[in-house]
Length: 228
Length: 372
Image (cartoon, rainbow over all chains, first blue to last red; front, side, top):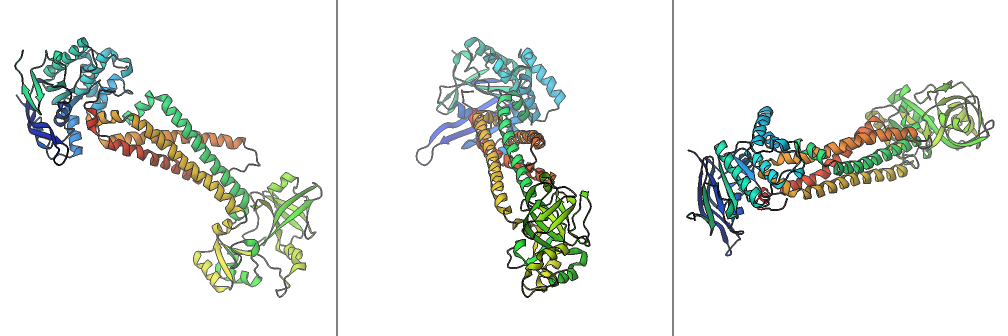
């Protein structure tokens, strides 16, 4: 079983001079293939910083991060961009689909960036859309979709380039309980059928049913609570 | 271009509006350019169409033909250097002529030239003059609008001499006045009562020498003759009374239009780009390269400016056909090309501000944002 994400002694401090604040403090995390990890924490606990560091959007003050065995240290902006494209899938709050692309084009766009063969990409997009139940919506613009459908398109988009790991930033924030649960279940299903890994950052404790591990971000480090 | 084209497809109204504005601006640019060129041509076509690239005149004439006065020896010196067929004397005289038959009066400029030399007018109607013909004239086609045609007799108001119109030439204006070509012999007669003291009684002075020469030859001629300088055709045209003033104001308008075009486009795109800041953050987080996004913005501007330019070119040609003859309009291929390239170039310059803005967007902005 291979390790998809490994964070070693990651520290991120803000501020300068005497007034510094450690948002992440020697944080360690290992996510293996097939795992779906939930990271819980109240707002302001550093969830966004954690996700940005793990997702190669932010270079932490110190510490090492490996994605699919590849170190993020000593990579410049361009290389990090390429790595995000190939190895990382992102899901953002309120889906963040491009308003001017139809559902299918949302998926084909990322495959174009990754220079996937167009025919292959079309097949892959069709599979994902069918699995996620948005096949009938493939020629619709995002404005015509419901919140749940938008997030399902976001899931499909995130998995399109077969990334090693998916990072989800509060994927259920803009959804009601039922729809939120369904989206989380679908992420879990995809982790299983893709054989990859996912990390979800959330503040909603009701969404943890399908997660393989639940971690709490406390004082800049991740701790596992005993299941209640 | 994947994103650029799809975005335009989705927001048709927004991009159509920008295109209409660019269309109007580029139309105005082309149209005013055409009018400026038309006016310029209507002003100085007689000099512009001369097969000469240099003119020799008195050095204290400040490049103005009518202020210069040369004598026969200067011409023979010039001919000895540039070749007999490559140097010709030109005498210029503004005057007013009356046409008895047509009951018309017109301001004209007399050009007295050697009818065997390189300045001899090429008639499009009637017959050419020869050096032997006496009392004959070839007139610019503009005079035919006042009823003066081949066979008419025109009388010079100043000297009282009459000329019979033998032929008509086209595009021959000097200082917005139609040119009347006469022979040098008639010029002598016209000036005979008016020869300045001390000069050769046999030949009345002329104003300039038109040259078809290399720059070295032109310099040699200027060096050999005292109080004489050679200027290029461009310099000569610029010094024709009224030309520079007219063209400068029009060119300033054109320059402003270019600046406005660039500015309007820059502002529009900048506002659109600011609206899309979060989208750009998302795109970068997903792994879109900056170069891809830059091309997307530039591509949109390119498509918009080229498309609106194409439509405005059609409009300009259509407008040109509907224009009355009294509004001179001229657009040569080279002017169109230059204007188009400048317009697209300025548009792209305006787009650079947006590109810079996109470059500043941080992918980090994608995380932790609730708003769409």
